[in-house]
Picture (tube, helix red, strand yellow):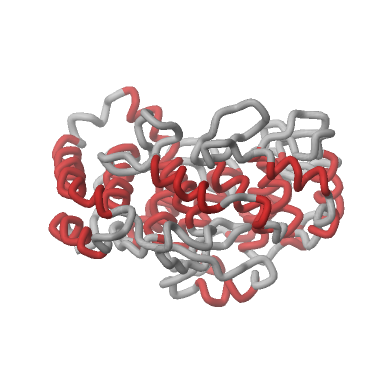
Length: 382
């Protein structure tokens, strides 16, 4: 997408839509992109940029998946796929960026990026080594560590199982034992924590529910009234979701809670209209979506807020339609190798919905991939 195309994209949003007010800022966002493209060389040694370097693979996933949901083509898929492949280690697993250690979190993001880029996972280099590396992360109790050095966490169980599901290699681990560990992470108040006997949290609850879905073990929690109550209690009076009791709303929990309810087929637990309004109200005039009102927008919250909107049946009477995968958080349209993959996950997939958000959001995504992801030379789609 050339910069002039970014400016023209504002015409795709109807004047009477709730997003029309923000379209005027797309030009400013284009200038923002151009400015940081020229300044990338001088900013290479900035401390913040160095810290963000480990977020390259995750950042590419957040940006690419959001753009796919919004039906925006901005980053060149071949370039993005190559950036991810360059982060692969000798173990077959992926690091967050070149020169760093491999971790299951980044390995999952890497596979998600490759899917979004239309790269066949059957052709992933060192595939057998990758499968062995992931399988070796499973512990005796069924849990998974994030790498060969770290402790177990229900997030890592989800990432490992999702990776193996995408690679069609769930048979390489002990699935019943993995299910048993996940169920042991259930808290007394109904949600799930990162480990047994830990506090329930919306992010970990999503990871555990999604893991059970991948393992074909959702029947363990489908009739769990305490889990349903815990999820319904995550919606605050402002329409947004919190991660645990007593906390204020945060846009990223819109996905963790919303997708959990959708996987359980209990969408009625939430007020989707007020949730959609909450998210839209957090769209920044400079582009992107922030965690809280008044905060700076960031790519992480922009992605999970937009993904949550893809679950909503309607947004202010604007029709939507996007096949967002509620377990794998992947948008499956317009990708050569995704139809087959989506069919293989049909039991976990549902036709959901999405409309084009403000042009300023889509332009913001491009700017953040350029700005935050180490100022690499990012080719834009012409």
